[in-house]
Image (cartoon, rainbow, N blue to C red; front, top):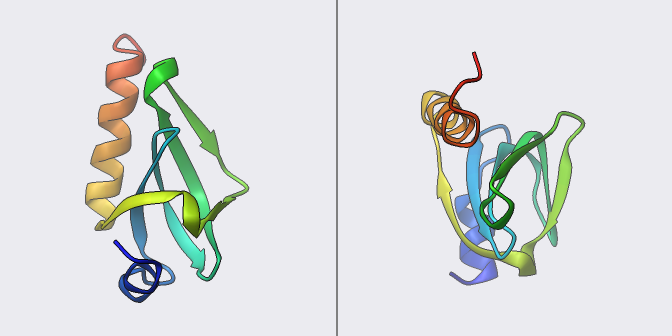
Length: 92
């Protein structure tokens, strides 16, 4: 996906899944440009088998994005819940 296509598809205020070399990033788009600013961010770091949360937000360089998927709020919540269950199946 080209940078221009990515920026056109992403909507400010909407949930998005970004695929990067480090893992999968889910958050709410706060601003878009060379840096995609997200808030309420979760990163599924596949190689480390852990999910990290960045409640204060995170900026992702658009050049680091391999792919993306627009999400509904319920899809975002289901995805994060699935990640947490996979990484820590006994967590409540």
